[in-house]
Image (cartoon, rainbow, N blue to C red):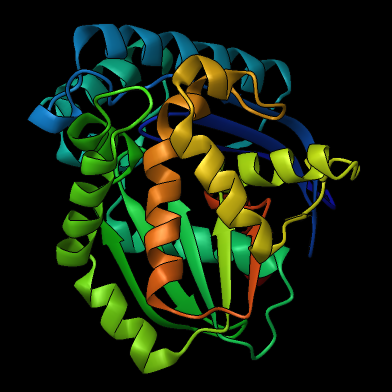
Length: 314
């Protein structure tokens, strides 16, 4: 009997598509291949509720490449999930059918609850939360997931369809962003994230735990500036809560070209990071956290852990 199986988790996000291939053992996995592509499937159409032809071409090219990689690596299990942009696009069903006929892969469009469960599964394994209550934040392009939890259970969660691509389209019109647009964004968050404010009052999370793109970039910037070895191959990134305010002010005051010159910045992240960090700043202004942590694991790792635990239970 084989002691391990090779599995692939594919996360079709609004901004980025992720492929993670690993050998699944009884209680761990060994990464074989890890790749992220800036597909930006929500660009140009997410606000109107459709996936543009140009975005479909980019997406299909990337999924074909991922399929070639999984075939070459003899992957036995492939699980592929689509999130916010697909949930809200009127033409998503037809596009999913096209992906299946072109590649043989069948993406499953998941709801916010399933997305939350995968994110929680990844972050819980990355961070030793114990019985300390954390607020997990995953800022996607289409949706933002907020999870109040400890190591044993989720206490409260919500998925809001106000991700960074949607916020950028609505509020980030000038370079650098205008203070008027920042204030408009904060007012919008006051209205839309009122359930989160109530949940933070009720559960009193001590730690803000961020995961995925924006938070990975914040950790990269922090590590480079403080001559700390990169944690990209670890489960937790370095970050100090007190470092957020000066980095945020810098990002907010720079143009796109100036942000691109910041060591640790990527092209895709430079476009979205201003509104994303405005969101983080809004959360920090609403609740006093003792600490800020960054999980290098997110949804794709959560998918692999889900596969691993299902395999172990059989």
